[in-house]
Length: 153
Image (cartoon, rainbow, N blue to C red):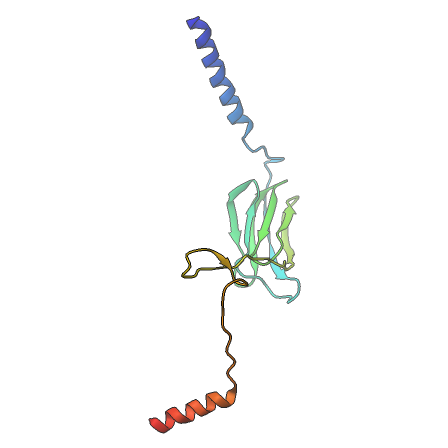
């Protein structure tokens, strides 16, 4: 019985090792290419500064676009490169060869945010449900206040 238990324990450890080895990322190729280019906003046609650019399978392998919107990144053939920027749709590019002057055009994306207001009631409430007062001040009343302050000074 003791030997049977040892066999099960050893088999369990071998299965765990096989499972770990199966999780290792397999690359399509070991050819490493340099991908460089520019990231541009579709609507404004301007360079995008600070776009996050990384390899999908290895998030430690990445860069950001500089002040001119340019970037350079080393990736293997078959890797998928992700271009991410707040307020824009993610752009995916598959590496097939050395690419210079790659032009990535990012398109804006509408974001729906749930605004939360912190109030004295100690409970969360949406901005639309929060009590608020709105006051309108016109230019003539501001002018009168300024004249009054200057008269006092």
